[in-house]
Amino acid sequence: MMRSIPRRMFLKQGGLALLSMGLPPAFMSRSLLAETAGGARRKTLVCVFQRGAVDGLSMVVPFGEGAYYDVRRSIAIPAPSAGLAGAALDLDGFFGLHPALEPVLPLWREGELAIVQACGSPHPTRSHFEAQDYMESAAPGDSARRDGWLNRALTETVCEECAGRTLADGAAHAADHATGQVALAGVADPLRGVAIGAELPLALRGDHPALPIADLERMLESGATSALTALYRDAGDLIAGAADESVSAVERLRRADPLQYRPRAGVEYPRVRFGRAMMQVAQLVKADVGLEVAFVDIDGWDTHRGQGGSRGRLAGLIGDMAGGLRAFHDDLGDRMEDVIVLTMSEFGRTVDENGTGGTDHGHGNCMMAFGGGVRGGRIVGRWPGLDRDALYEGRDLAITTDFRDVFGELAATHLGAARSDRIFPGYALDPSRRPGLLGA
Image: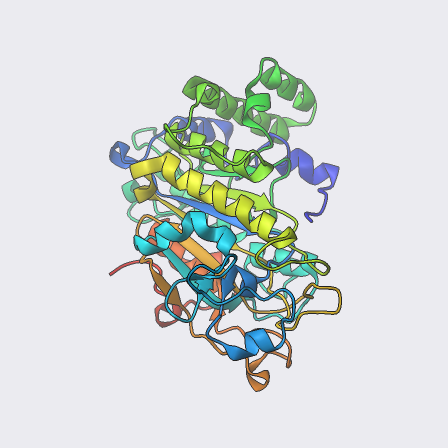
């Protein structure tokens, strides 16, 4: 459901060409080889976007809410019951996981997985494209915004060598590195932000260089870098310079030898696109190429018809996602201490089942987060209930947590980004509104 990118934009930020920061290539070249200060491992945020609007009420089932069963005749997930096949997996006596999420249930029990309920965008749109753009730009209602919150978060990472300056400080920051006496600590490295896919999603577009990787193996095969150089040879100094930096990034990946990658013993990723994507993210994390933000899409959640309940179309999608998430977790092992995975979708679906065994475009939804620092084993966010008078516009789960408060907490606390006003323009983050995913 991603829009196609015009050729002019592709030349600047699609394919393997990287975005310009308005800085000379020599500046970027130094950053490409820099490591984090002191050689410490970087924190990584992996965003999994469920495009098409997942039915959060099936994914995380409010089985303690009688109204849920009143309006879902054929697709409701049964309440937990000993020996009942297809029943929800009890979390706290009120909420349960869809049975297809069983692979991640141990993460909940071990205190690693948290769920944000009644979360989403305050904007009323029910358009997939608009809502996806608003979530990726983190600017609900601003259809002109063409850069993403993850890209802005990367530009706001503090360079500890420069008294708190960030890449967004532009020329002043660059001046601190002009003599070459102070390493840039990797803040301008294009491998800090990677999307697994053929196109760079809006969330990663902007002033910071970022890289889309449709398939790591094909990208690194012989001839890929020379073809890229030829493609941009006559595109002008700015784009040609970006292409040179792209080639440098590809060469760094090749030296890390990810094509020889083997998951940890006993770990098997689902043999679907999402499973392969998560395996490639694991490769990049364990290759220590400097990855800080990864973006992965999983499509197909627009279940207007034949959604199914414990089994069926939706259950299959949830199972593929759960298998990929659990394999990723187990594959990284203790590296998960530095990694957080966050799932998201543009909006939820109607509380009522429709006449074709599905659900229509809704409003509030849920997110899942697990990994290093997440205070798991908890449902966070205020649950508004499913009584008719509590529903948004009389039909949808109401929103009690703005998605920007979730993003803001992770950007600041996990990634170490500064200046939230530049990451979330027009929205004042208030620590009191944070869902409390991280920290003591």
